[in-house]
Length: 333
Ligand code: A3D
View 1 (cartoon, rainbow, N blue to C red):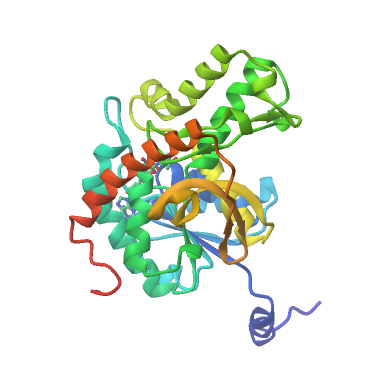
View 2: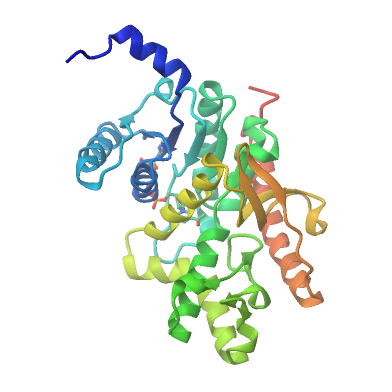
């Protein structure tokens, strides 16, 4: 038997380049996302954190799980941005998570500095990547990443709607005792208490839930969805949700890296859609190769549009705070 020489393998690498995905922040959400991305074989996974040893230890643990779970990608941990060079996609989860009694907005002052710093370093080493932001307060942090990176809106997207919609879907399936596979839903707007669940666009096997459930039950599901994050924080006491958030961002990464063109609710930078200019809002997006391929504009009722407008007002308050800070955008760095 003869193994190919190192030179031969170098030649192969030139022609068969695997995708590379970096996850910044190897805490609860980051590690979960990295593990799921590896299991889906989205590409080689790099896990980065400021804490020495944690990303290395978690990455090695995940790699050692690969013979059992049967995925065939590299998983490595690091503190060095050089190791993230040439990433196709970067997921930012670095920053503080909330504890009981805190709102997502309470995290802004701490996390804006972290997200700005991380973005600057990521862009230096992966100038062509797509960035998916998870850090809260989401709409303000994804705005920060866009300002600092100078990337077009196609390549800076926020994760929130996939998670909020998954929560709504799970509550609907539980209430109606139907398979989760048959339930779809859209939650739009900002990722805060003023998010906008859309019952008219929530369906079970294509039938709107407005035809299957009482107004009271629908209202209860919408309220539980909007408070879904706080419900988990209250139970955990030491942090916030991570299994569903990790799965949600990997769903977005899958559509982008495999170029499947799924329509998913994401925080996208709006340029006139839904009457919004220059802010991130949760809207249905087509995700594929290159990131955001298009924003889908639904016809909203007057009440739904009013809820979107109220949600936008909450986002504007946060963005104003970011604009008041010296985050150093791409023009000044
Ligand atoms: P946690 O488990 O504390 O992990 C955060 C990690 O970030 C830690 O390992 C830190 O060491 C690391 N970190 C801090 N600063 C830096 C830095 N400068 N560079 C690299 N790494 C750094 O938190 P988590 O994983 O539970 O949550 C992470 C973030 O996601 C928080 O801001 C949460 O609020 C947010 N989150 C958002 C959603 C959305 O739906 C938008 C859902 C769940 C969590």
